[in-house]
Image 1: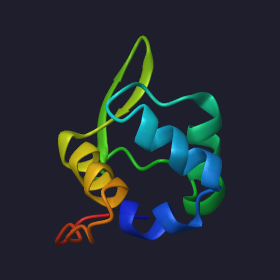
Image 2: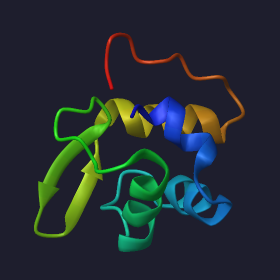
Image 3: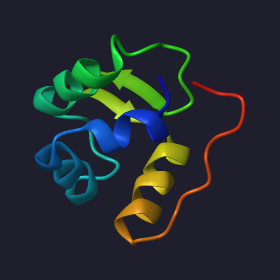
Image 4: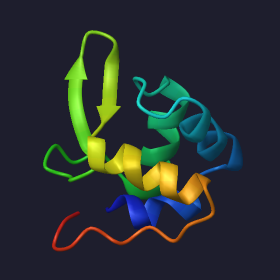
Length: 82
């Protein structure tokens, strides 16, 4: 499921956390909320960045998308991706 689809379905506290901590490794609560609304995190998703010792990170494109959403802009959907 694409970020554009799961974003509005997240709990407000998860969206607030993603905005406040944009670019950081995701908290376990946020990962669980994404999985709650979108199913298991697909490894090929455009919005998925690196998975490292500190956890899952979003891609640069996803960080930009969230920043646009946080600024009240309407981010462009990613084309041909999930």
